[in-house]
Image (cartoon, rainbow, N blue to C red; front, side, top):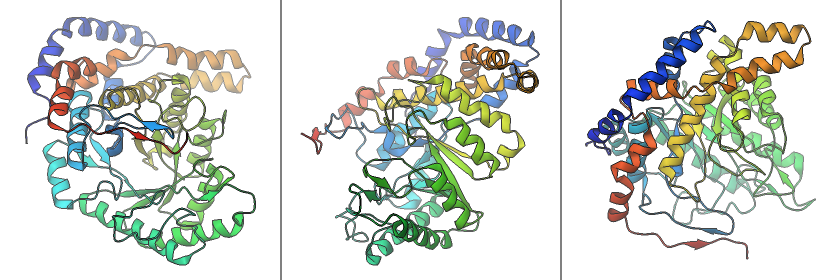
Length: 431
């Protein structure tokens, strides 16, 4: 099938910006050279760094109060893939899509064909036992009181089987990992036996682990609270680490930037998990108060940079882990395609800035107990405008120098709105 974006749109957009971009790239190259940095080597590294987009992210999100649908929302997985193809065509940083089952269940051969036609592949799979699926004959039982840790063995068995089915679908489409996040927990003290619930969860995860293909990994994702507000079975990175250790060498921890207690030092958690060889990957987003699922880098870009500072600084220890990178956002007031394009760019920006850190100088200031100068080394990298490097990486891959401007010029959203029926709004559970 043809690209969702007419290549001439990108060509026209780039032609209008080519001269200014070339000047900016050359100027940055000169400034970086004075610091002993090669802009060509940096551009190559940035070009090689990619992040997966979530299939569900191309639809409009919502809150616990209400959901306000956007124009031209995708009605199923194949239209979701079309939207993901747009993001990749313009930004050239998101060649893989992460699916959610059963939301995205479809014939694997058709999924592979559509993805290949759009220049896409599939990243880690995501199971779903945090809501009921009355239309799915394979999940007739309710997860209201839990799933993998449920007191009823029949519900646990159903949840395990769903995860195994998700793995089977993923294997058929070329995925190599599954992320398991559960909403299990309690809202009242005494509602659940905290120790027994965790033991049941571990037993269920061991059953899923036993069903992993030889070349697959499983990621345990933690979250401090919500929807359970008194206790959550997998509430923190320590619990996730215990799980990964007990399961075995194919089990790792996944870090969602919004799933921690307020003011937690996430970059330190990342450093610990790298040392333990259990960092499996990330769900990138941003937050102000909790699990806000805002655009990556939109609130605290310095924290995102500090996370990447730890990743880049880990060197070979990180390379051996090859962590999976994915965006996980909820777009309530923006066009999801624009938000995902920008977030992928911001994630690459943080990576590029981390590549600029003078690690020899930083180590010297750290060992010399010079906190101000150590901080200045990081700030110097963070303050550097690496935009021309990001733009050049897109340009060389066939993308747009200004992907959001090109997207708006393409008229894709208007065309999608004309083809896809409007979806009515919906209320939440709180009044």
